[in-house]
Image 1: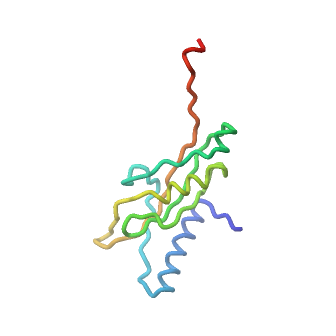
Image 2 (image 1 turned 180 degrees about the horizontal axis):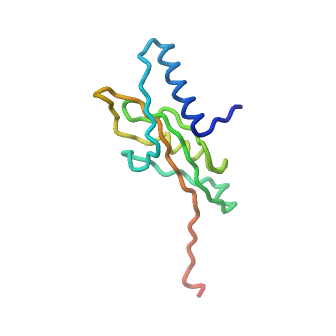
Length: 130
């Protein structure tokens, strides 16, 4: 199994999209990296907190790089950093994100960028204990 991180992952998903276009005879898509995507999405669903993380009282940040097709749907996602325990949940949530379509010079484009998920536990104390 090969694990690609950060810039290497972004390059790999761009390469994959170009190879697919060449294989199917389609036009090689223009792919632009938009960096951090929080605030640029129509919808970024929350990630489900894994039961194992809750049981171990773990927390952490997971960064997920996504590839967004011309209509604004995520077509590929991969966690690039963060605790392994949370990466699947973050990737699954990122795959459900929805973006407005982007254009450049009037032509639709594909985009890459990063979504960050923060897994943390909140603790509530009852006032009856005081």
